Length: 342
Image (tube, rainbow, N blue to C red; front, side, top):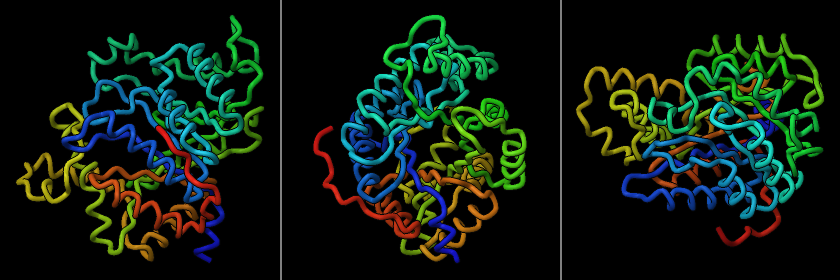
């Protein structure tokens, strides 16, 4: 029964192109492309990349550009963004970018959209987007989709007439906006499960069928690590958890450090509290334990798709975890060889 539950949903991968300590951003971007090839070969349904600006520990600042590199280096996996932060951009430009991607890689491009703005004031000013820009997210989505439908104030070529599946990242009021526009939603797994489940229920209740989706479609994004033992899996998530603590206490998301270096530190009470919060939203275990955890997650949310992410110091350990998840999910490895380049 557990195996049937895991095979009842789609499985996808999100990579944020995080930088490792001592690494240059260009190396992190090449690792993202290499990781996409692995995800493609393992049989995952999608591979998405994210958008961050002015963050020393994150190389993924231009998701549509990175998506083009990923799509060029893969053959089967769908490629998209998780997501393009729409308040940072003019909808016309976003439509044109995805129109180019969909024209070059027909049938393989997804358009994940978020409503976040820059993390700090200098970044927001550089982007020309203030905090209030997020309040216009619903209007921006309507304008963006209008360009694909040929109803914009100008023609957005080559996007006009193309069908690029849109997804809404449920940050803040994102779930309600997704429901109102009849769009699939991506929700992050949180340790406060009841709040997450209430948001899923609200989305399904308020969903208005439209041209992009006839019924609600829920993607649950989860930070998940699998290893030979539960202890080893837990260590894989320490680097990203510490980078989150660093960002909350020092204002900068730092490059990923080895777990042993982090655990050897004498943390302040405030750092320990933030570290516990960061770990609470992560799932980890050996294969048997993670099978139970993922089955429970899918059963409670009735998710249509699971979007897994893991950023750790060792890319080899990350790939091992990803292979184990693919095995649990019963994914069929691709029959074609990986694409060279990038």
